[in-house]
Image 1 (cartoon, rainbow, N blue to C red):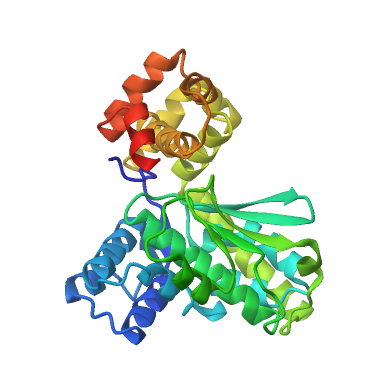
Image 2 (cartoon, rainbow, N blue to C red):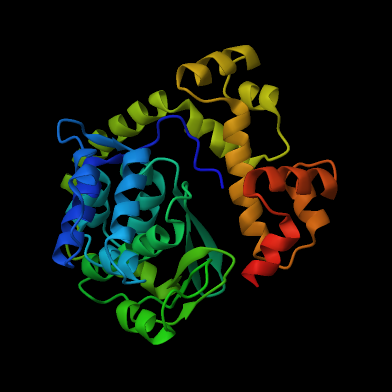
Length: 327
C-alpha cells in the first residue's frame, strides 16, 4: 500500500510534542528511537517522523481508541499560531473559517473542507497520509470536538461524527468519549455543526491578538507554500483528476519541464504525487455505492479496466475485492 508521497510535508513541532505528552499522560511509554526523531532545534517535523511516532504509539498500547483519547487531550496552545488564532476568534463560525485557511501550519498535506447542509455545516477532514490512518483520523476528530467545546466554554455539542472506517471498539465507548452519535463506514471523516452553533461566542475572543497573529500566520503560510510545490501539485490533482502534468504546470505558472525539475529537487515526481492522490481518492469512492465505471471516469481514467489495473498496482488487489472486504 503506498504512503503519502509529498516530498517534504511537515507537521509543527509543538503538535508532535503535544502528542508525545498526551501519550505519556495516558500511560503509553514510547521508545527512545521514536522520540529521537523529533528534533527540538527545528520548528517543524517531517511527516515521515510523525508516521514513525504514531506507529510507535500503536505498537505500545492495546487500546483500540488510543488515537481518539489522545486527540481529546490536545490543547489549543499545542496547535501553534493557527490554534491561537482559532481561540481568539469572535464566534465558532469564525473559528471554522480560520481553521480552514490556516490548518497547513499545523499539518501539511491534510486539510479541512466545509460544506453547508440543511440546518448546519459539515466540517470534513481529508487526511494526507496513510500510515495508521484510522487511529490518526480519530485523533484529529477527537481534538476537533475537544477544542470546539473548550473555546465555547462547553456550549458546543457536536451533532454527529462520521468515521470513514469501521468501529474499532464498541459504539457506546465512542459515544461516551465524544458525547454524540458516531456513524461508521461513512463517506468521510467529519463533524456536523448546527447552524446555531456557528454563532456561539468564544470565551477568549480577542481582536487585537487575532490581528497580530494573522500577520505571523500569513508569513508562515507563505513560507510553507514556497517550500512545498508537491503539496500544491497534489491539491490540483485532487481538484482536477483529469489533468495531466502540462495542465497542472500551466495552472502553477511554469512549464512541464520546469515542474519536473523542481519536483526532482524536492525528491519527488509528478507521477508519484498523482498516483498517491488518485489512490486515496479511489479508496474514498470505493467506500460508496458508485459504479466502478463512474469511479474510473471521475478519476480521469479512460475506462474501468485502466482504473482496475492502476488500483492493483497501488493496493495489491482489485477495486472489487477492496470494496467487498470493506463491506
